[in-house]
Amino acid sequence: MTATAARAVVIGASAGALEALSAILPALPADFALPIFIVVHIPPDKQSVLATLFQASSPIVVREAEDKEPIRGGTAYFAPPDYHLLVEADGHLSLSSDELVLYSRPSIDVLFESASDAYGPGLVGVILSGANEDGAAGLRAVVDAGGTAVVQNPDRAFAPAMPEAAKAACPEANVLSLQDIAAYLQRIACRP
Amino acid sequence: MNDPLEHEKVEDIEIRLLLDALYARYHYDFRHYAMASLKRRLRQAREQMGFESLSALQERLLHDPSMLPRLLGFLTVQVSEMFRDPSYFLAIRQKVVPHLRTYPSLKVWVAGCSAGEELYSLVILFREEGLEQRTIFYATDINQDALAQAEAGIFHLDRMQLFTENHRKSGGKSSLSDYYSAAYGRASFDKSLRRQVVFSDHSLVTDAVFGEMHLVSCRNVLIYFDRGLQDHALGLFKDSLIRKGFLGIGAKESLRFSSQSAAFSDFVREEKIYQRRAE
Ligand SMILES: C[S@@+](CC[C@H](N)C(=O)[O-])C[C@H]1O[C@@H](n2cnc3c(N)ncnc32)[C@H](O)[C@@H]1O
Image 1 (cartoon, rainbow over the protein chains, first blue to last red):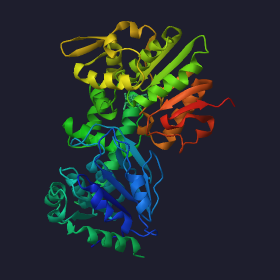
Image 2: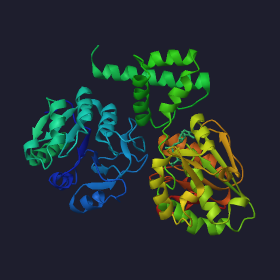
Image 3: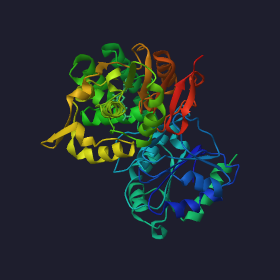
Image 4: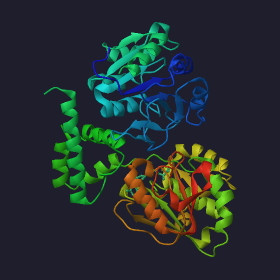
């Protein structure tokens, strides 16, 4: 599906995120070569348990992103609650407490747009289950920069609104089941 | 010509030139801010100020100083709360204050004070702990509008519910409503809270050290800087603090990736409160 070798993956999810990510992150092998950046909508006052939870069940490294942290392959970075997560073109992560975007902080659009600036055609954007429209503009930006769009099949998503909106914004997106998304990510990260 | 990557490169050139122009003309230096979020805010500024391109915005900016405050409004992020992250203020109260009590006079620097939320939080905390009278607070920011708001001490009344709740969680010994009067949808903070405060326009990028501080609280400002600039600002804080003085930064900021980290030791690790080493 990708012409250019993939260099990074961004994932956005909201309602139904736990179930959807559970089908993907634990399925990736320890030698998965790419960094993965993830925004899940969580209430601002909640301590995030996502990183701890998925670290326990996944062979890859899973952490909550820290400001100005150098990006490493084989690592999944979750945005902390109440902060936007952005990718810097020089290979670092940034957090910000800018205004909410579409009622959300962290915002999927903010992550996807910054990552598409940083990686261009080397980026794969994945939109999973969710009950709002965050991520649609971000996925559009991924495609406009030459990257690849993947959307969870809305018919099978816990909350179809977000994948529907992403599909509508990016008709060229690959619409896949969770299992196929996991298989797809493994394939692109293992190419020579 | 429609190649998105080609467009990308042009935008990056425009950003560099605009930031150079802003610095050369007005001495505001955003050249080493964290680029991803700055880029986003520049795009917003261009759109909402109604310019075709960033170059067009730059041209106007160079010739028309009235553009400057508007642009600065986009480039500096003014999101804040009183007693934001109440556990930080609780730690200041329980762990830092006992040390501060041992000094006959105190200096506190709130760097990047925005509209004053963090400043008033600290002044109220110091008053509750009986330290206000021996303290001078320096409240600094580069955004003039924000500084003017901080000096006025007026906030929307509908924010008071959150601020009150935060204050309570921070170990507040009084009711927040003791410190303001409400009228016409606004909460106006008592002017006695500003008696010990000096407000000034100061940039962590282009201005010099402020002397002999016992506590520097600089929260959610470093996060907007790139690593080199973070190091520079942390160097300023190191040089501004007395030996064993305290530095508090934002909940998701860290000294971990900084070349200045050796100058500080963890004081309350979970709350990002550090202490300047005695050397
Ligand atoms: C997100 S606010 C943080 C407000 C408050 N400290 C808090 O944590 O809630 C960031 C502030 O930093 C200020 N700022 C940005 N660049 C600065 C600089 N170079 N020097 C001083 N302040 C700066 C902005 O104007 C803004 O008021």
